[in-house]
Picture 1 (cartoon, rainbow over the protein chains, first blue to last red):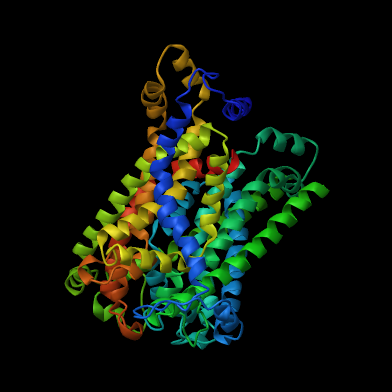
Picture 2 (picture 1 turned 45 degrees about the vertical axis):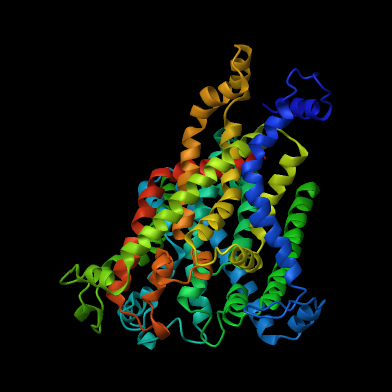
Amino acid sequence: MAAAPTTVARRSTTAGPGRTGRPQRDHGVWFLVLPALLPILGLSVVPLLYGIGLSFTDAQSGRTQATGFVGLLNFSDLLHDSLFWDSFRIGLIWAFGVTVPQFLLALGLALLLHLDLRLRWLARALAIIPWAMPEVVVGIMWRLVYHADAGVLNETLRGLGLSGAEGRDWLSGLATALPAVLVVGVWAGMPQTTVTLLAGLQNVPPELHEAAALDGAGAWRRFRTVTWPALKPVALAVTALNFIWNFNSFALVFVLTDGGPGGRTRLPMLFAYEEAFRYGQFGYAAAMGLAMVAVISVLLALYLAGRLKGDEDR
Amino acid sequence: MTARGRTATRTGQYAALLGYLAFLAFPFLWLISTAFKPPRELAAAHPTWVPAAPTLENFRHAFDQQPLLAAAGNSLLAAAVSALLAVVLATPMAYVLARHRTRLARAATGWIVVSQAFPLVLVIIPLFLILKGLQLVDSRTGLILVYVVWALPFALWMLTGYVRAVPRELEEAAAVDGAGRLRTLLSVTGPLLAPGIVATALFAFLTAWNEFFFALVLLKSPEKQTLPVVLTHFLGAEGVADLGPLAAAALLATLPGLLLFAAIQRRITGGMLAGAVKS
């Protein structure tokens, strides 16, 4: 399998007329590619460049006079916008606070599901639920869980004798709102991560495990020396993607708290959405989006570079 | 390891698994419970897990309070059309990406990854302006267009994995037997690819069915809004919600996704992993 692509690549780079015996090849490729490429160019690449351009303008919704170029004004405004930095900080807390527990819990569950336990089918079935649900429904569902009077959380705590929680409204308390939405974020993303990691685990050759066990390696040692090296590429990809998705997430927190109380859960996306579609500040909101991309790119580059370097050192 | 040690390990494993099961299941069970509770029980000082007098009233009220059927129709239309278009457009390109290591293929794969990293707000503002110029804001067509483009990267990603899983040797054998290129694609590759295409389409369908942000921004007329947007109307001002109908509507909105997902879950992870690992 691995040899085949290289021969094609060589053929396509050196293809003189008639040499391959299939001169229509290149036209055929374009014919196959364009149907998907044109929409991507028109409604994904162009808007993105347009959006980057907008962040250097004073574009506003419903304005009659022409939009003007303002250089870096939006960005210098951003620098001094303490509300935005608050939101940014919350976004980072959210992204780390969801991605890390999500990964650890998912890894634990994936390892359990990989064992020969009963009830595995039930866990697999349940893992589908958060994945298949609309985010809006996940938000609604957890609002019912956290509800001060009709919620199951307060009732359970009361049952455990923790009366301090009496009538506590988790999602509107200044101290509890962010932890409460973090739990929902973990819950919502964990199954997808689990299933991906589980698929990765199933690619680990069982012979390696057996060999290590014969050599007397304990469970932890086997995990470190056999499972983890094989799982690492999948783990790397899934945590990087989860981080991006979590940092950019919107619907869940929009439904749970709409950024409240007092902005304690106002993720950058919520902030930028309000700026763009409640106040009509298109240029400024685009600048926020660009700032978000910049931070994500830097963090991801550091993460991936660090990981790859770790591989070389070994 | 001693027998007793092994039993202890097993017990610990089952305890952990049960903990996971409880964590995963309890919000959903509570949603179901709330959906079937009469108002009196919802207002009770001590809410119970099992409704004492289960009722379907909440479902009736849900349909009375919001245009759920119309919203489900809108969602169905947007999801079905966009999923169909996405796989029709993506399958040929995925084939090229999987079989040819050209500069284009590398650029496209790079873009698939990059496009995942951009916050929606950076995309939605220019999209909003472009669609406004085309008179496609507050239009179902506009939303479908956005969903198609939104589904394309993932569809390409998954389908590329599926194409790679079809052995190239089969195609070469068909070519040796004298089958033309198109014929090879249609009669050899196509049938082998069909399950992957179906899984990708269903995945795109679900993504669109569940999508909220674009629908929230692009659709203003109540009669055009999709199910997730209409569901948020139940929350009302300041979160004072009629809990019963809210839960009932949320439960109904989940069912199609759950059924579809149960059918294709295995296949989806297979495809995503194939795309991730073999690239």
